[in-house]
Length: 362
Length: 263
Image: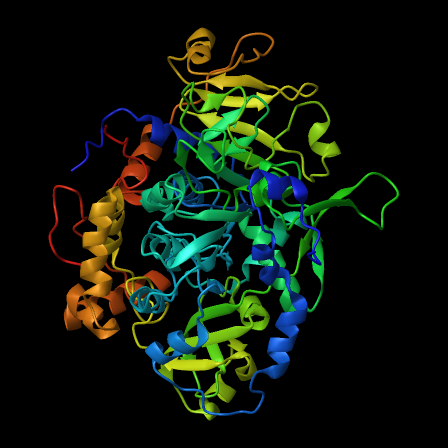
């Protein structure tokens, strides 16, 4: 007998036979226990990406990550998960969409969705195919704001929050975690949605700068990262640069405290081929090729990932394929210009289309 | 090179009509695509003092090139503040946002929106699309919500395949009874013109029609029975030549969001 009372209509609509698969995301007791037991001492947690993924991402984990879409997203950690062949992961796609590729690669069987797609680059035909082929099972549907509130509730140290989002919509019919209740503070009818605090097993956060203990500095939109860092049972910090602790003490801005972190990975170009604020712009042609060529069919996507994931050893290899030093120089100027820290530049480029592949990725 | 003197295409018309919904000094909640174009167009013309905010958290960025992602640097370029995502939606709830724009794959006669899928079954859709993103949040929390999209009978449907976001639910008072705040969508904009909602039934009604569009012709582009306003139907204003030129040379010079897709 489960200790959780899920929204029964949603459980039935989603055809979830054994609801224990849902438990870990709302299991506060085990999350608190994990936080109590993890290393509280300020110790050096540096390790390689390989070791961090091997040690702290376990088969069956409920996983989330950092950034927004393809901005400050830990793509290189994703590729490593694919290379290591992790199994049965649950992924929270809020707001990231990259778990679609883990599904294709056989790493992820379950998804919690708030957004699937590549924004202005279009819908994700791979996820569409995976869903219709039964290769991924949806465990819950959300809005961005709904899942952000669930993660925030965990960071705030509360059992959950009440919201006015998602009321009356079909999302409520496909989310076992949500319940409509009467606002206890009001005498007139006032339906509100109870959103429970959400506790992912593991969060991977890529940031600009961290120290060896795991104090992590983020520049640009933090999105849900401070919340997931606090909530997750295990936290992997990957950073463009590892700096001395004194440097972290002098920084002003958003900092994740060290004791959340289990692993610290120095990972320059960890968000490649996405955008890393302050460091590099995203490779637009790479994404166009992924969406327009790769996602068009299973065969194409296999060819694409054989080349770009399984065919590369690490992120340096990846950068070499994008154009090496020339790519680094171009994308650094592009991101600075986009952020307003550089003279205006021309953002035009040679777009990838199905009939024209310049082979350039900057 | 694009022909600067060609007549406005439907997407350019949409951008213009959308821009006209924005008033100077407003706080405008913006997504990517046509709403972004409209925001920049309004900013460069009649509303130079608007403040744009984005769901990934950017507050009052300096506009520049067109963002491809709601998180990309153009949404927080030199922004004095960047909020967390849960807080950026809270700004709608707490009454700070004056106008918000949403797109749709389907919209129904009560202004309910679908961005999830084509087909009724979530587990076996005909086509899975993006899902909510911030669509439901804005629809649930905003006062002045503008829906924008291209109109066909497949997109303007009697009942959405999946109700991602609530407009007026089943009409009448049902939105309020469901507990949602805000007034629901105020206007729907398509290449055919503008639509509002009849105050009692909350059914979609023609507000104005673009040049060349009649009520009967528009009805053929609609999958449900449109309501007709009393009296003569006003004409949706055309984009003036100088604004069209601005749109093509400065706002979206590469035609990223205002080029009609080819089959």
